[in-house]
Image (tube, rainbow, N blue to C red):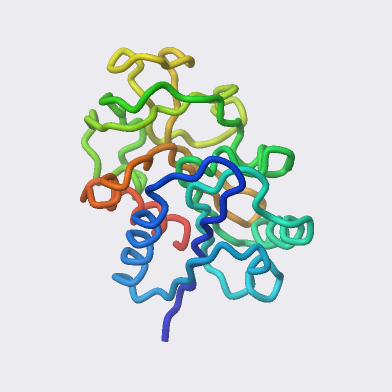
Length: 219
């Protein structure tokens, strides 16, 4: 009998990442390793009070644009405030642009990115399950998302940040958060800006990062 039910949502209404199938497969695999049940869907009708009541965690995997109905937004906010869990991956930072609650959850908004290139992730909090498996200075290749503001000012717990001296095109300077988490009422939210390429989801360190995020959310 599965103790955890994870809903992986992949709907896009804007740019669609080619890595979504690889990401969904990786997340489902991580969940199945823990004997958790998963559902991968693009159907906004999944966001009902009845369906969400069965979810220990919801994943927004590179969702872009408006991907929820007004009724779905209401049900999702109620779910999160009541003790639900949300994992936001990569381009999902650019989802629900006109929903204020979602912006408050993230603490900032997506503000473009330079070309994909190698750089360095600096682990700020090595005690969190999502960053504990990573080296303190992690060489990584990604899109290195920029944000409209530093989310640290919105009260998030920053776990890792970008070393802007290791790549070109950063806009936040010495303090450029990439991975963070927070609590909202009784619920939990985790965001990672990483995960642009399909190859990322085969990388053992990145998979451990996602696994640790789910562990924290469901713990």
